[in-house]
Length: 318
Image 1 (cartoon, rainbow, N blue to C red):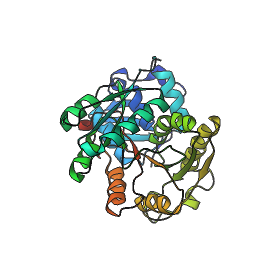
Image 2: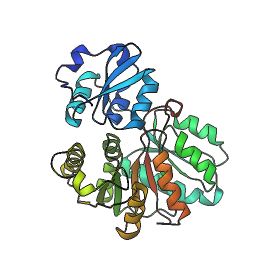
Image 3: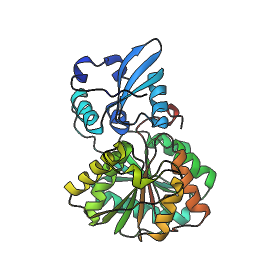
Image 4: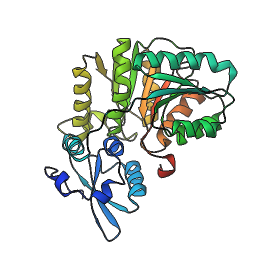
């Protein structure tokens, strides 16, 4: 059984040594805060005690077994804002690279278009730059996004799993974003995905469709979204953020295995110009979706934005 914790005075009693292991961006991405350490275990308050991938990342960062206790998204967001010192946002740029000469023009055009939409600078790497050097550059906090294309499946999988920053995978010539699909994992990473894509939605005057993903093929979304369950609260909060930005948004529900839900919607809904999906650790599920899209030649030519957690890939285990 997972306990529910009141966070009203968390910042006054926080273990600062534990907090130093969980940067503010990590706490916000996973909506989780360390509470106390005892006998090799750390109690962590989280909005998603069932998110095993996130708990494994936190376990690695805290170097201890995690005992989760539950709190609401809104309480955790407020506690994180109170606990970590406010800092000025870091000026960031977009990194652009592909190792294929034939794809240079499409990747560079996409990177520059995103730079204009997000009001960020664009740094273009030579296509001869080794992948290891690209990932070392992407690890610098000044870069918010790596825009890329790779045809080699093994190298693309390595990039998706090990990239220290979010990725925009280019799969065709750049076209304006009129409508995009955000696949909701039901976790705090969805809010990070929205933060990443909202300026693009506003700049392009695009429509957004959000699709909450069932956790398994046997899950019944209509039942999960009934009443006042956490996933319904999560969806309500996400839609409220879009409504505050005056974005036209639709909600779609699909049944089946989670990756199948995404692919079915891409093929039967839309048409969509961009898919947005967040990774919980190093991206097992995201890679499963991407590899199926490529293998089944589904929804060809359109880009995929993969939002990655703000942790060193060596610190993740999923």
